[in-house]
Length: 435
Image 1 (cartoon, rainbow, N blue to C red):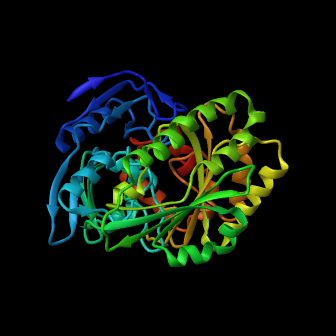
Image 2: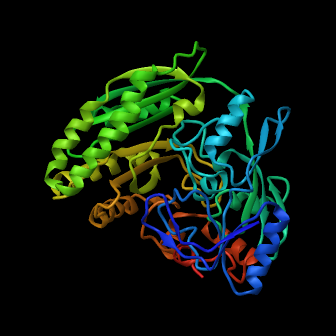
C-alpha cells in the first residue's frame, strides 16, 4: 500500500479534488480494511480510474482509492468464454493482453484509456446494432461494500446487486474485479465515408439495420458528416498503411485539429470556416484489422463533453433540432457532434435500459465556454425523454432522472441497503441519486 494526499484532477481538467488521504491497495483484503477504517474515521471513500469522466463522480475530500495495484488478468476461462481482470486494469492493456491470447471483447468504445471499473461504472459504450455497452458484456464482478464485505455478483449470485453494480456510479461499493464475456479474436472491416447531413438523416435507419456498427459525426456550421461502418470480415487483414494512418489519425485528427481548436477558442468568428475545412479534411477509406484497432482511436485533443441517449426512433428528429438551434444561434461550435446506437439492455441505470437507444454527444475544446451550447442541447434532449451519460456533463437531478429511468427506485433502494451511511457518497451522487 502506498499513500499520497495530493490534489487529483480529471483528464479534461474541469474537475479537481483534494482528498484527505489517497491510497493504492494491492489486495482486496487491504482495500476492505481501508474502507472500514475510513468509515470509522468519518471519511467518505471514492475509487478513481484514469479521470476520463467529465463529472465529479469520483471526487472526494475524504479517502481516494487509486487503482493501479488492483490490475492485471486473474483468469482466462476459454471453455466459458470469459476473462476475469482486476478493476484497475486500463482497457488498453486488457485489449492488448486479450489479443495476445487470441481473444477479444465483442464491442468497445472509441477510447481505451479508462480503467475497467471506471468505464463500466459510468456507462462507457461504443456503437452497435446487436452488441451493447462495456457493462453489458460483464458476466460477474467482485464488490467490496461499506462494511468491508466482499461480494461475488452474477446473474446467479447476488443477482439484484449484479443488475445494478455493473453500472453503479461507485455508489454501491468498490469493484475489485470484473469478469467479461470474450470470444475468439475476429477481423472488422471499417468503411469511413464523408456524407451529406440530409442523406445520413434519410438513410439512418437503413445504415443501422445493415451494419453491425454504425456511427457518424456531423460538423456544425456545415452540411457535412463523416460516417463509419464496422462489420465482421473473413479477411484478409488490411490494416491502415502506417503513413496514411498517421496522417489522418495523428496529424489531421489530433495535431492540425488541436491547432484549429486553439485558433477557434481565441477567435470564435473563425470557427464556421474552420468547420468547413475540418469536414472536408477526411477522405473515404477502408481497412480491416483486429477489433480494438478498428473500434478505438487516439484522442489527444482535450475537450469537455455532454452526451444524451434518446429512443432510437426519435434520434434524427432530435438531431435535426440541434442543427436548427445551432444554425439560428450565435453559437460557434468547433467540435463535431457524434451519433451512435445501442440495443436495449437490462442494467438498472444503463442509458439503454429497456429501450433501443441512440446517443447524441456534443463536445467543445477544453477552456471554451460551454454553458450556452450544452444548456440548449440539454433542453432538446430532455424533451425526447433523454437520459444523460453518467460520466459526462449534465444538470439533471434525482427527481428528474427518476422520471426517465423506470428502475431508478430499485437502484436507490439497493444503495440504501448496501451503504446507508453514504460511505461512498459525494456531491455528484447527492445530486443525481438524492440523499
